[in-house]
Image (cartoon, rainbow, N blue to C red; front, side):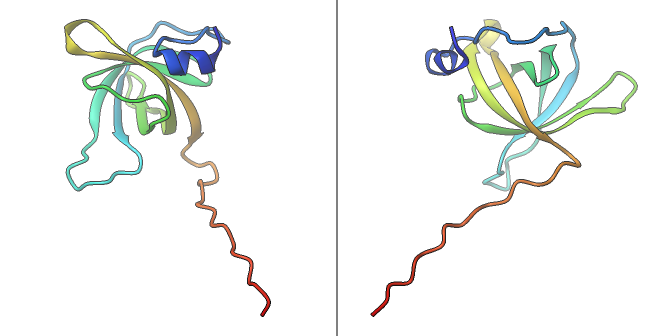
Length: 124
């Protein structure tokens, strides 16, 4: 199964790189925040790799959705802080949700910019 197939079926795609089974507390919020009440929420890592995170979340997220994530190591040092895309999501036990995230950029990297299309001016 490919990552694209996993996105549409809601099932995790095959893993392309090794993952560490590790639990960390993660703060996250939807990106961009649309409402004043869009507070940061708490999730937990299920696993971690160089390019992404497996999370245990208190709510459902959708494949393609963007999340701002912050993960700290046990000593409080910042381990991951950046923008991630939800690759897959499925219901877990106890009303929780499991999701796979791919990191898009981390803090300190060049910010993503909105690109506006230019309109051609018609000659009269």
